[in-house]
Length: 211
Image 1: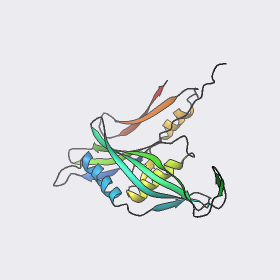
Image 2 (image 1 turned 30 degrees about the vertical axis):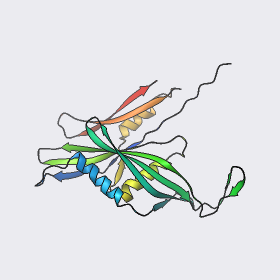
Image 3 (image 1 turned 90 degrees about the vertical axis):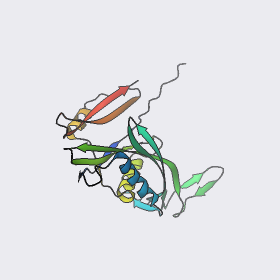
Image 4 (image 1 turned 120 degrees about the vertical axis):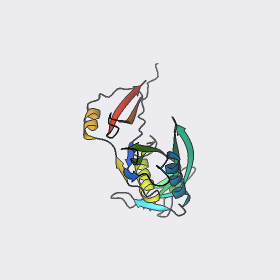
């Protein structure tokens, strides 16, 4: 009897932080390394837990710890965050292993593997004025509830890194995505940015790789 094939969707939602316009100062234009160092400083200053409530639910999610590793993509440095978080304030349910344990309000249900990649972008309007921001890539672990890691990522960027975040999807891109057929195989979708010929406008393209 042939083994039935299984298919899995691996989601990596992409966001950007709010674009900031800067003017080159006495010490020149900000660098990628300086943008990464700024993130590391803010993560290093994170000493106490932060929490957020789940919509229309009593339970709340608490971000307790952030570890990071530095990487190079192409020639650009980036930061991979590993976020520890747990859910608490649960009023019902139980955990069962060798015995059945009733969940109490102050119990914690968590994990240490919520991954977020921060990739710095610097675009120049001319030799002295430029725009900087981060691409934020979120690994949507298929073992977690839909949107769970996205909520954690948004709270990390907004409340700990103190950088406003936004979704980069354009209406035209959303329409194109809706028109794509569903294929029963592994698909990895890459969303990337490129500059128009005038080096000013930021546009988006989707690259689809399947196999």
